[in-house]
Amino acid sequence: MFQVRIHGRGGQGVVTGAEMMSIAAFQGGRHAQAFPSFGSERTGAPVVAFCRMDDKEIRLREPIMQPDAIIIQDPTLLHQVDVFSGLKKDGYILINTTRSFAELGLGEFVKDFKPEHLLTVPASELAMNHVGRAIPNVPLLGAFAALCGLISLEAVQSAIDQKFKGAVALGNKAAAVQAYNTVMKHNAEETHHA
Image 1 (cartoon, one colour):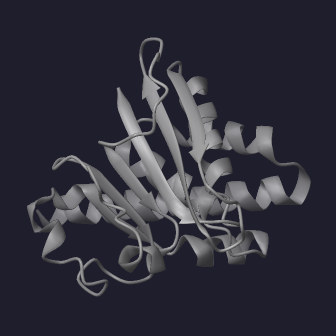
Image 2 (spheres, rainbow, N blue to C red):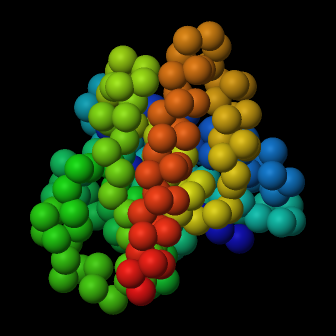
């Protein structure tokens, strides 16, 4: 079973992001579940959502305490919430930011993680460019597909079509593709340098 915890703020599409991830996993033939965990849905308040994927039926229902991957939609949460709580040492970290892990003050924390499991993507900027709103959830989903390889870009696009219509769907698909391609290009360069 692969478990993802998404941290963000109210109004950033955290719950929708988890739902779309589960739809994409389901499209890929996996069992999946997504659920939110919030006290309040106030805009700007910290929000957490979860997604589980497995090749067999998922019976667990409790919040994810030991995630395989963490997606951080708002880097200001890094110093307010213990976003990395329980993260496995071979886990994945995806952060919506233009800054590096070192610039975020995480250099020491991530030194024991696999470098290919660590990723920052300017998801808010991609969303702004393609959709006109800085909601990072869809570009992060595209980036996650490239980072972990658990869901395909096609499945992400299908999930977008189920959640959005018209110009918003097209913009989100373009943002997801750009995020996905950015990560794939980065991975290719890393492999080339290794």
